[in-house]
Length: 165
Length: 165
Picture: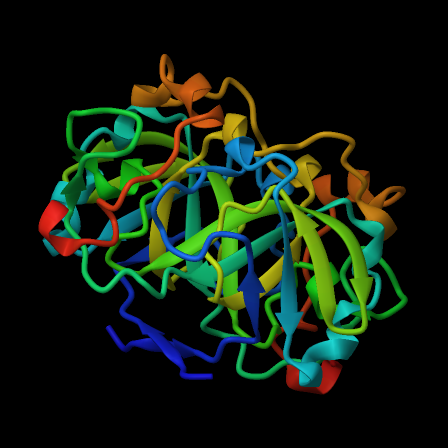
């Protein structure tokens, strides 16, 4: 299949200068602030976004340079299929995070609950509308008895150092 | 900024052979069945995914060949900023849908609640874990009094026919 190419529309800034010791999900990043610096050419696309409390950021895990199909996630010691975890080392290094949108100033978005490394290239912004999803009878597989740990678990270097695969 | 290129990992199949008259969100596609045909090379990445009832599909809106920064969404007559809507015609034509995972057979995923056009290139699969997101005090801006309409509203050709921008 033909490759698909995207041009980043901005940069995500956060207090996390490297991938070690970061929150592993937004639930563990509550209150952590950051910004999105959108390229000025896209400014008109921000109209009406300020009415939303939460937005979905889609970005490239730019520090992830390869992948394994099965990896040990932060929340378990047994390797899982890469599509059953959210780790950065995936066939296509795409990340998504739901963050709180605090305010918009020109092309700067002030955000909270940021679990993203500083300097990450942004690919898209979508409004977060939980009402759109059909979430009935949700099961979360291997995470069922581990999801609570995502609140305070921090990352180590396993998804940055390729020797740790 | 440097472009980011991804190689599709599979194809999404659905009953929707073109973009007209489709449900506009998963909530309007309840029960509609489809499949994901994953490339066989990624099979081992599916381990442990079958424990999840819902998965996030990330895909390319391959029929969208351009974009506007402000467009009329299906649920309103007043143009909105493209980042405040989920329409396909966006600077980077990335789509996300939460679908129900019914079963996995080899590299075929049987899914429901499919609001995706047949033949769409798949970029990533992630487990859907609502517990990971910090969704407190959600506001949905211009959609507040229109979100109910997403259940039965169908698409027209505005996001396929570029004359309709």
